[in-house]
Length: 93
Image 1 (spheres, rainbow, N blue to C red):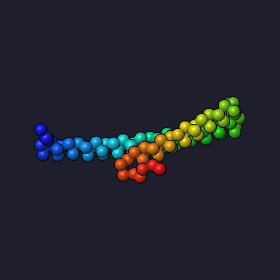
Image 2 (cartoon, helix red, strand yellow; image 1 turned 180 degrees about the vertical axis):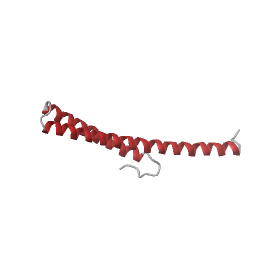
Image 3 (cartoon, one colour; image 1 turned 135 degrees about the vertical axis):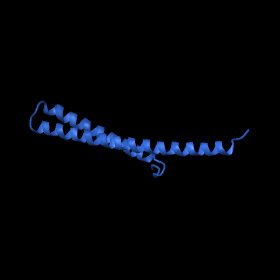
């Protein structure tokens, strides 16, 4: 037994809503990852500055700055991945 016309129409509506929600989720995830990257970059700069002015353990601050930069790089990569998950974007190479 097949679907009725109204069931088929409803299935199409649900599929479209699902696509819109998926696109919104990918956009939100990319935005969150970019924001996180910016926060990590700011933290890295603060650690750099703390090392420069001799506040606390300079080597520890440099290690922390490097860690934050690595996290920022990972967050930017995640944002690019999320952007590629959007239906109207170009597929990754």
